[in-house]
Image 1: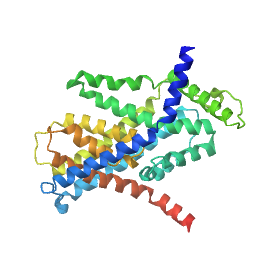
Image 2 (image 1 turned 180 degrees about the vertical axis):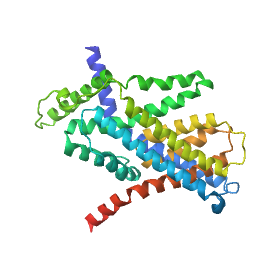
Image 3 (image 1 turned 120 degrees about the vertical axis):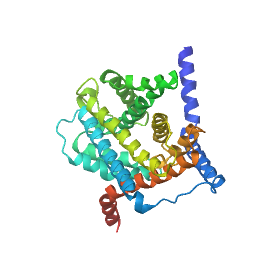
Length: 318
């Protein structure tokens, strides 16, 4: 009886609290921090680089950003395959790449919506929904696993491997069944017709652990980091930098940008987190400049690959 009262009170608390508002506030505070840092250090920050000497670096960073998008696309393809679609055409990868730019649209969910619709057309709504929403968790696990290299700095980083434990067939099924229960309960309360089916009929995980998809996600994070590192080396004059520390901070900051849905493409949150975590260990002016160049290059890569998709959307509206 006490448990039921506590449970009811807990759900009432969640209903009253607008979690989306907290996410927006966090996003706006991150942007504010980034802007305050820029204007308070504007006399020390310089964006001047010799394009003639460093255009190869810029091009190389751009190529690694392109590569990261494709690695992420192949990870998604293998996630969908892990969820039960055996025959997948290569256009799944192309579609992922084309819609990747939609993550910059305010709300940060429209690329998921497009991918859900795409999978729903070739399979069923359950597989489309869960394979789409689980993909960010793969990225988070990969990023945390790479961040755990920081265990050489502190034992705390070992805790970052915990999310990886839940990435297996048994626990994924437990989570999905719980989500299905909540979904049916919601439909029943709204008095919508709810078809009865077994979840296993719609989703059939092919193996215990999604090894191939996870390896692609690791490659995605590493490619992103190499793209950033090239920008950093282009503007950095200090060759005594601890690159392992820089890598750990990059992974953690990228994860923060990922888990805040209110931040389109992690803009602002990733940069603010990076500056905050680095502290005084590396010149923040160098980090700031590197982050700006990396953001411009990575966004340009998204726009370059998604241009046909954007063009098609524009012509549809005309």
